[in-house]
Image (cartoon, rainbow, N blue to C red; front, side):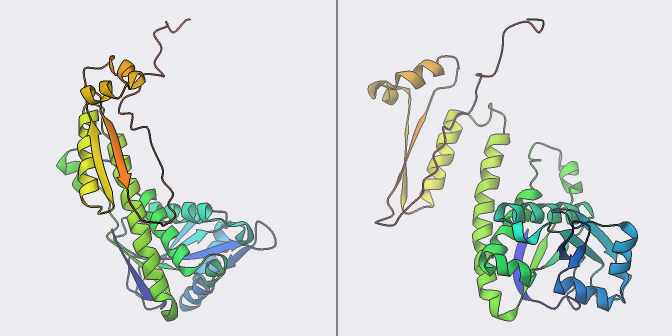
Length: 287
């Protein structure tokens, strides 16, 4: 999936789906269209507003509504996405909304999607943050793990190929920066999910150690050292060695060293457990 920042020309963009937004008004039932959604409605001679009224659409967070344009404007379908209460919108909520957008577009077999960032959202978040959250929501919301499925099944998987993030010309650079950051985060999260979704017969301690070494090679400020069983015995890591006695796989201990100078850094450290029997019970079901 590729993301691009483009100027906002909602009635001229060529795509399978154009996503616009709406939020709740003074009441939960009132639907307030974004400026971009209003432009689309005007180009469709009011068909969007009419359809929403007949379907009693509520602009709750993550709710979606699809309308076919029947050739009146370049894109094939309008995807209206609910934001909920705009005043209470958080970044986590924005990512959830973006995930709903991505899943609905993917379910409709859209290959090219355009998303018009509304000015009201950009008043809540910066353009850069909004673009990053959008990329993360769409990418991670449509994530699938199909590595062990047949080639035929993988070919049938619906894939969004391109997402155009539409914003004002003066905000394109900020949007592009947010897109790049979102892509980096999404790639890292998806990679971690792939490791977790592999069976423990694949993601063994040895395999995880090799993955860590490979990642460190591409990061000039990170070095990696993987300790084996003998190293761990020398270091007195009795707790890990004791647990590892329950497996035929040799235990590994991964040490990643980050040398980023004097910059403030947040490090997220995981246990790296590849197989956990802590939740298994040997008691009979009746007990």
